[in-house]
Image (cartoon, rainbow, N blue to C red; front, side, top):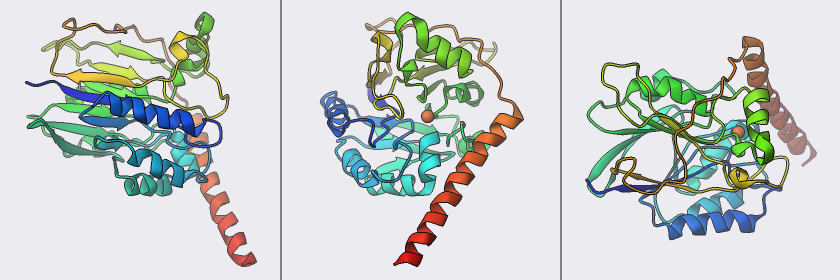
Length: 285
Ligand SMILES: [Fe+2]
């Protein structure tokens, strides 16, 4: 099997906080790595739809095919509009769906979950068309969804959302993302890449540190650096140098139904606010 090279980017947050020059540099660095496929795990925008044209221009610059899933910011800004912009830019957007891509005469399934933070992930729907005879890679904005994807024969899930904690000195990232945010997976590789036949079904999840930011414009510390992760499928762990090793998850925290409801309501509130603003603008024309 010829190794398949995949570039993973996440949390670009195209908008006011992250300079366009950084976004362009990330695309150029990705292209320089000559990946067969680029996958992006959500939060393409930052709070609004104001920079969608810029996003379209940016994603068009990738030289390899691009497949992506949405994040919470995309839902807050308007999931349908962000997805439509991405499609205009040539990105295949998976919203609880899967697709098969042929790379170097080998077929790979990509399973894309919609954003779990805002309550839009539907695992059953995402894995419905999955074939057992083909290898599968999972994409999810929220890494904890990997726990539910592994049992469906999806051994590796790529994710984002945490920005690696963004400020990673003195393990502040583990405290902020793990303890306060309730995440089990903060940054890097977790789980196992070894198959355990007959044992409890597990897999691996990789959380990318991301490219952009949505609130604080800076990133501090080694693990908080902006990141493009390159994966080579078809090579065994240990055959090559790796900057990261599988870590144990943090304890994490189960979300209360109240908190989930609040998150879902925020999306609806934002949508209503946008519709109202559009109506007011039309009235004033
Ligand atoms: Fe996010």
